[in-house]
Image 1 (cartoon, rainbow, N blue to C red):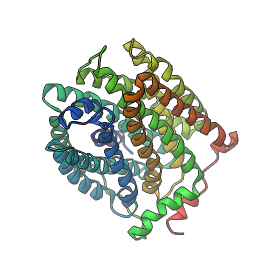
Image 2: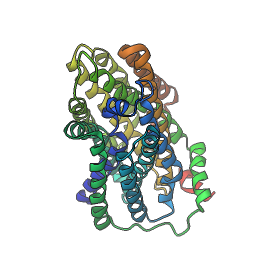
Image 3: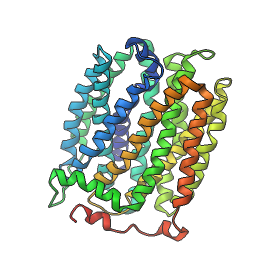
Image 4: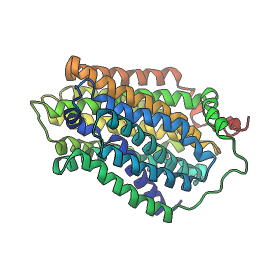
Amino acid sequence: MSPPLVTLIACACALSVANVYYAQPLLDALAHDFDLTEAAVGSVITAAQIGSGMALVFLVPLGDRLPRRRLMLAQMAALVAALAGVSAAQTAVQLLIGMLCVGLLGTAMTQGLIAYAATATSAAERGRVVGAAQGGVVMGLLLARVLAGGIADLASWRMVYATSAALMIVLALILGRCLPMQTMPPRSLPYPQLVLSMFTLLARDRVLRVRGVIAMLMFAAFGVFWSGMVLLLSAPPHGLSHTAIGAFGLVGAAGALGAVRAGSWADRGHAQAVSLLALLLLTASWVPLYFAPVSLWALVLGVLALDLAGQAIHVTNQSMILRSGSDAHSRLIGGYMLFYAVGSGAGAMASTWTFAHGGWSAVCALGATLSGMAWLFWAVTKPPAQADASPRLPACDRVGRA
């Protein structure tokens, strides 16, 4: 895959996934406009994550059956309509429905692009290309907060979603011209069997299950931090603006860039070593984060460590589950990201409830516990050292036809 095409896919991933996370730095404004309590406003993020989970089950597997480029362009058109709906929402119910649709379509687009990249590359470079695409996802996730905060301060939170709808239209035109068509398998499963086969993959593929649970705990810790941080920084003693809060996404992006080579290291057989170091760093990051109420420098250090560790784990996970030359890449990614959706949604909801009842120290205790659980689960399930470099069993390639 040519470097310009890799860059285009990474940028498209960033813009697509950003839609799911624009709401995080806007939680206080949404709570005010729709009369939601601090404990309840986390449901806005949870609605988007429910949509993400639905996409992973019902839309992402379609990439193994239909031409991916046409499928993604259709999803982008629907995403533009969903973003316009959120921008125009007048009630909390309309907002939640709109966020569910944005999560559904933004996630389908993002994971469809990653599956496209994985299918279009050889096994030798798959970790590198998927790592670049996943780097775009993390950059979009983090920079979404910067863009949303800046636009909300200049105009309003509604303009955030109107602007994103316009960006999606431009992106659709570019992808329609630049993405090559892919050859589909000569025989594909009926849609009901296609969806069910994803759960068959989950049942049979131990690597997918293990790395999925690690991802679920890691993204739950992420959701705990990013949702709780908004409530912390928008209140005294910090009292920061949306722009300032969103700017911490730039700090996280800098940390994530430090892990861009994680996919290449996994390709070379070092996936377990990367996992160990990243999970230990993830757990340790909550020490400086605990001091965020009294020191923004401690917050910066904690964000750098948290996002460096999270990106390294996420890229390594996807490199490991996509090692085989499978015709089920969309379903493998969909199955893996189900764990992500569960973790992110639960973490966001738990964070706002925990902050309302126990403050920032309780949020940090929850995040550190989840991070430590991820490390403990990895340690218990880690295969023998020689297994890390061994090739994946090809069973996944035949699950869809079994």
